[in-house]
Image 1 (cartoon, rainbow, N blue to C red):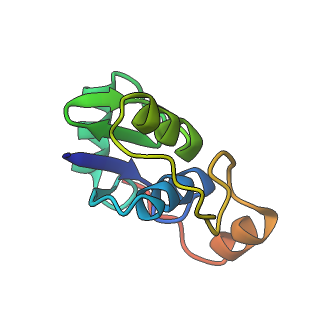
Image 2: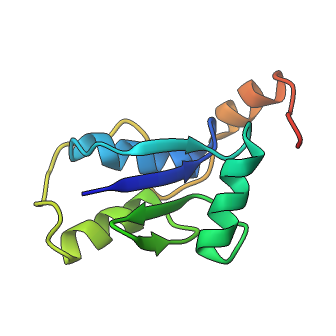
Image 3: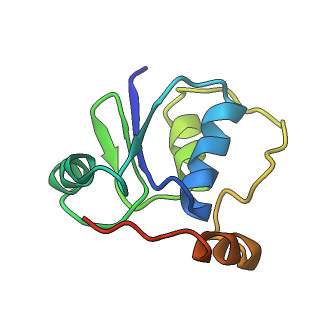
Length: 111
C-alpha cells in the first residue's frame, strides 16, 4: 500500500493521522505542507481544496480528513484489520490548549 500523508508538523489533526498510521504499523510518507510550498501546492492540486490533513492511499485522495476517518476508510476497504491498541493522541480533534500555547512560542513560517 502506498500512503502519502500531507500533514502539518504540529497539528492535532495531523497527529491523529500519524497515530493511526503507527497503530496499524503502516509505512507512509509524512509530507510537510508548512515548510515546503511545493508540497502544499501538490496537496491542493491533488485534493482540489486547501484544507489539511489530506491522505492519499493507493491513488485515492481523502481530503480534509481526521485520523478516525482514515481508520474507518482503511477498515471499510479491508486494507487493515481491526486493532484495539490505544493511541496516545486524539484521532478526531484539533490541537489542545497546551499544544497551541507550545506552538505560539515558535516562529510561524509563511511562504
